[in-house]
Image 1 (tube, helix red, strand yellow):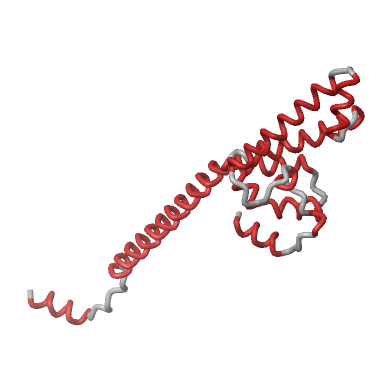
Image 2 (tube, rainbow, N blue to C red):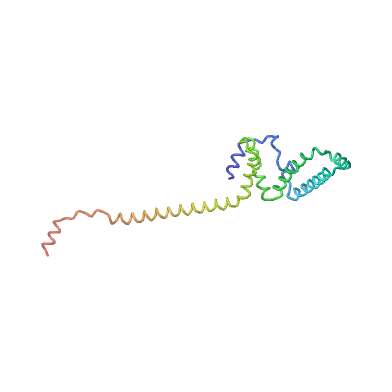
Length: 191
């Protein structure tokens, strides 16, 4: 798997416009800790819920408050879309295992999206496959290596046994020397 990462990562340069990722969605740096991520999302969630309650309230006072936040009611669908992106980012980055995998494979996701036309759903599937089946993949790979070693050992034993058996039989299968019949006949006469 890491060979694929190295090959794909080395085969492209990251464009400036393609740097949008989960960290930028949450307005964080890549060095952000889990605590910082949790704190940032808590703030985002509180603000979203506050704006959502104002949008649901039809009073003129809520319109004034929305204007103070820099929003109007028509912007709420865009805000909801941004909030769902932030929620996805938070769900990934707040889990240490998912964060580690995301940090490791982010550039490949950009490459697959840009060069091969992969959609976000495809990348999500690949990501979930790596997260969900990563441990199973490692266990299966380990078992395959063990089975391979055992097969090599078994074939080595078979070849060794064949060599031993054939060398024993080769000694007994030697062609006997020609008998000198005259000596046998002389021996019979003496008796």
